[in-house]
Amino acid sequence: MPQSLSTSSLHLPFSSSTLAPRNRTAGIQLHPCLVPWQNREIGLIVASVKTRKKLDSERGEAQELVRHLMRSFSEKKQPLLSTLNKYVKVVRTQHCFLLFEELGKGDNWLQCLEVFRWMQKQRWYIADNGVYSKLISVMGKKGQTRMAMWLFSEMRNSGCRPDTSVYNALIGALLHAQDKMKALDKALGYFEKMKGIERCNPSVVTYNILLRGFAQAKNVEQVEILFRDLEESIVTPDVYTYNGVMDAYGKNGMIREMESVLCRMKSHQIRPDVITFNLLIDSYGKKQEFAKMEQVFQSLLQSKERPTLPTFNSMITNYGKARLREKAEQVFQKMIDMKYTPSYITYECLIIMYGHCNFMSRAREMFDEMIASGRGVKISTLNAMLDAYCITKSPDKAHKLFLKARSMGMCPDASTYKILYKGYTESNLKESLQQLLKLMGEDGIIPNKKFFLEALGAFGSSSSVSTSGAMDSDQANG
Image (cartoon, rainbow, N blue to C red; front, top):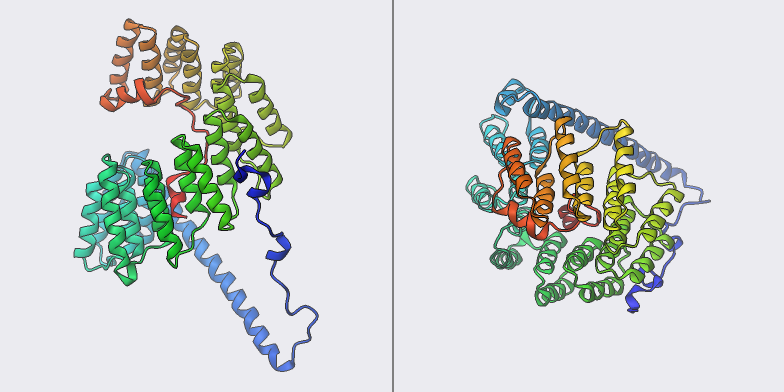
């Protein structure tokens, strides 16, 4: 057992009392001359609270307007620009910024550009690095690397001077490109360029993005170079620095490298958070190193952190893949005993777990209970049940349930069709495949090259449920 995994290694050698601020004025009588200064300090605190409340109120009003604009666009099918023109007297930069965030959550990156062009035509518009950073980030997440590069050039042409945040957004966008090696080389070029510009010096976010990117690419040598560079710089690593690298290594099955980063994290006295514990639990679980997984879970219970739903979901899923039904059920019971309320994702994990364990009567019973609850069944829950049928080589039952759900008004997504396509192909159900492809066309889902690769390749394991909850792309940004 590596030393880095011992319970003590996941705790820092100081107590909460050493971190508590000392009350230096307790029991001290203030000199009368100092009382006005004390009153002034209290006045400043009160003013600060009022300002914060006002800002919160203004942000709430802005969010409400953006929700209305999004409803008009998505539900009422009104053109976005027409809606913006309707509210032209009240929409400002903060509203557009929130619109970028909302549109970026879907596949509406083109609409982000429409909003941006609309902004530029308004009298109140002033070219701003923050707006460009947000747009570059959205374009990167949607795989529109060329558009991100164009926005970077557009920003410079508008008179804005790039700063660290803009370069961070650009580097992050590059790492979403299909050609990862080329993108990483280009990102390193920008990283070196940043070092030579005073207002663009790399921040901890810059290092976090690059470290995670190279760890995802399994380039251990470059990760070590970046760590050394970070340690020699004035930048201080944070918990996201190590979580990002460990998560990337863990997802790649590189356990030894992951543990090495955990040791480095301990040596820098960075306290692990619940994300750290979750990613370790998920990584060990996927490799079926259950002794280590259970040890990390016990360390989590003894720490100041508390397990989250993804903690339990991950353990249930990974025990299920190993067909350890009793272990998975014990985790679920532990969750209930600790007063956690299972989410729909938890039940999806259980359904797929029962599929792996060939206990389909319980899987279907749980699925039917979710329908009978009257809270509505998500398409991901249907996908979990279909996946369980396909795992147990019962694609005929999956087909029957799929047709029934569709007739009841449920709208299948691409994941639904990928699960069924894989199941039908493995069982050589040619007639069902033909019918499936026809229905895909009716639902507007195009079976392109990516669809077939995912359906028959990397889409093999519990595809409908995301269980780890360990990291997301924003966590690299701290």
